[in-house]
Length: 189
Image (cartoon, rainbow, N blue to C red; front, side, top):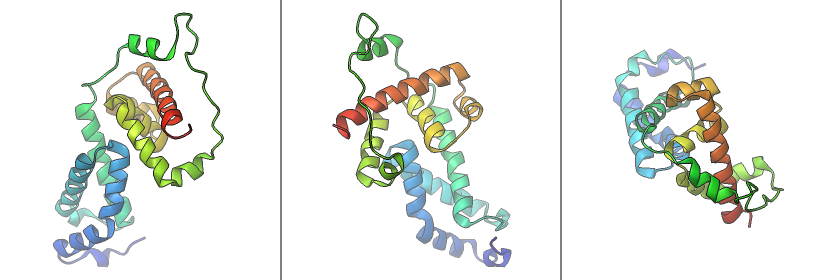
């Protein structure tokens, strides 16, 4: 636990220190979730502004980074809530892209032999994954990131995206199919 005395004094001095110590981590966190550098930068700025405005309420019960990430998570959720109803892909696109007229897979899926934990640490892989996530619709990408990367429950995701659980599972299934295809073409080939 962090001692409260550390946070007494000028909020601006503390914010300057927070900017120096945490901006890079906040930016990486935001970029991985929203996939757009300019949006991630804006979210980090909004997070730091919110931290400055609520500085006196920070009790020091958690680390500064945990507190800032908590603020940032809310900014990210608000962003996706505002933008979630704008894009979607029709069912016909999925049927023709992945399945033939006999309703069989067009391409046989290859098995992946790489260790997922090792891939997560690989900077190049993360970049390819980020590029593949950008190819998904916003709602589909957001649902996937919230579920698989951030670990939100289905109930939380449905609430934030304002969709049904059935719709969530359809979106996640489609996201996984599209990501698998994209990763096979751009990373595993």
